[in-house]
Image 1 (tube, rainbow, N blue to C red):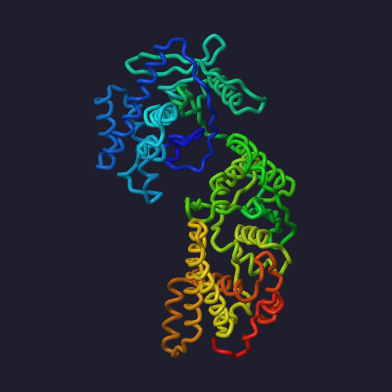
Image 2 (image 1 turned 45 degrees about the vertical axis):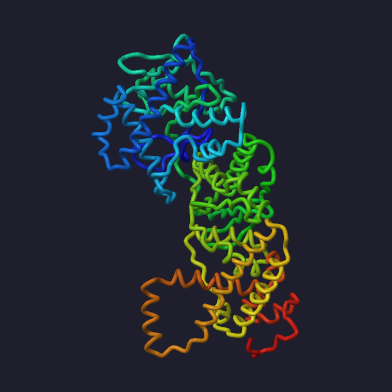
Length: 541
């Protein structure tokens, strides 16, 4: 279906977007009679149909108030269920818009499963299992928003009968079905134990809280997911005592943590390996990732520092045939964003301030500016830039870096280097017989062509001799569009040019120190044995 229909996950039904955290627990439902279960399955199928119907009407521009009445008449169900179906449909529509997908092409029940069924490459039990899974996702949902004034939830309500918790399911017209809620608290701090404790307190005092309930059909069984807003403590640990910047890196797979003072100075740094998160089942990886999140938060609590992370909106996972199978496999097994979300949740539960920053160019700036200055690796340097950005600092180009961007010899040499690589790659592509290896080489070639275009543009800018009038016009235009874009492009050009001209390995960035302090890029290149015999000062390439 859409994101919130992912296995094991729940998106709370809310009318407005909030910054609140929600606690969700899942339980199995057990029915005394098969007839009761059948009635609930019929209601779930009806509700799923309502969501799809509401989605189409919203696409046509229908008003929600009138649509709610229409759904209730058409399906013979109360308006509260109708409102929840409309809200789910609206969330699906909003999700398509945010992802820049065509809303008309949505497939309820998972497009991936639908496409697999269309191919008909499976037969027998395998195909039947796949079809059942798709139908359960398409037809097996039922949701009800919480309401504080109606004892937490009107249509799907938790009730204690004879020392056994039951879910009272409203079928409509005053008809209810009761299902036992099966879940034992695994430990004293289990979320379910806390949830039940709050329900019991509400029954005694009448001080109810809203909780949303979602029923899901999975492997022929009905599960209930209970979601409520979490009570978070007051933030007591802030950036006033400094911050810890966090960066996630693929090679090697680890977290880089950098501790800074409140004035942005580097204090210390450390790493947490994430290799174990690539092993075992999804449940095991989920458990281990929560452990990592708690480990990070414990460090922040001990140091009394806020946490700064990247605000990752989207990370490409690659695709089959792109020639990058190892990286693709790693990204598909692990979601970068998921770990940062867990760190944020655990930190807020412990009263620690979490600051999200724009991740743009943090790695490049760290690599070029702080890695050579502090003799640290580029991953740690990237985390340091994230930390400083969280404190509000802006990174400026070093004086000699700015001069280097106007050095025609430096830019010309970089263009010549990338030109040599392109010629070599074209030859390798012609000789390579393996299709996937050839795809990898073609991807490398496209990237090199992009770098060449970037360098040629910068070289052209350095060679242009502008009149005083034109310079004034350009300065006015630059003020209009702001200096941020110019700065980012400068960092990008430097990253490409320095990697081609001065560095043998991106892991060893120490030669850049000579460039920062003395603008001696030729000496840095010679230090790494990168200067060819034909390089002579002043030569035209």
